[in-house]
Image 1 (cartoon, rainbow, N blue to C red):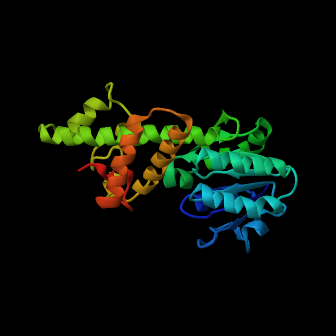
Image 2: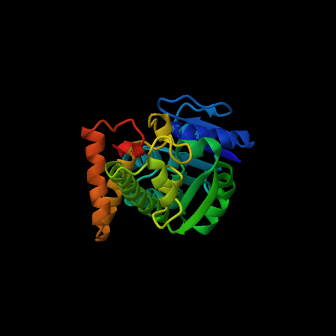
Image 3: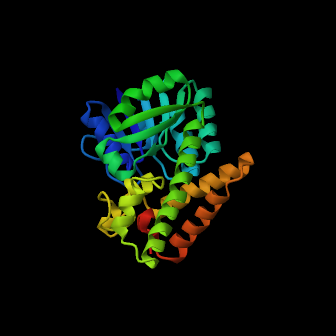
Length: 282
């Protein structure tokens, strides 16, 4: 399959490289980052998209997605699929999907979970919104870049699933960090607390797979001075998206709102920017 990959940063580069290693012809473009091994560099996003069967984007936000889509969609061949893997607001995802459909193209929003490590290892989870036939076209690519792809529904459903998932993640990581801080004050050994909670009703991914306490549980960014697997400012971005979506939909998410406030303070006032989101543990 001929693939254009727009956005070759920390996530996009290893995803594109995995597609190339699997034997696909991958032409990439990024305004700053070089093309990874096996991926040919295009002079522009539009040049990369010309003649591609699938165009994949991995971009920082909805505004940039809309701008790139405006350049890429007119250059795509009829019947090709525009697949955005960025994490953006639902309105931008749906607007780009409408633009693609009006141009005779397929369209998917397919944000991911798994971080940089998952992108490198090809173990991402894709949450996908869009028509069945477009999902079927892209599924072999998802199976190379990830270990699971869930078709969540129509356009925007993938972004909705990602926003809900990461709101849960932000809330549970804060609760996990608070529990360790309380255990410290009560004189409870961190390893002993982990041994209990990880096999009891307090079990969560934040505790069992991504423990924020150094030297406790499986290896995590806490064991590498909180070098980010998922940066705190990206968690803040996703929590902001969750609260924008909640306001738009009229949903009450008080814990999500508080998590957003706490991560905003951590990033902007407490030195959290550039550190892993689990570094909130005092």
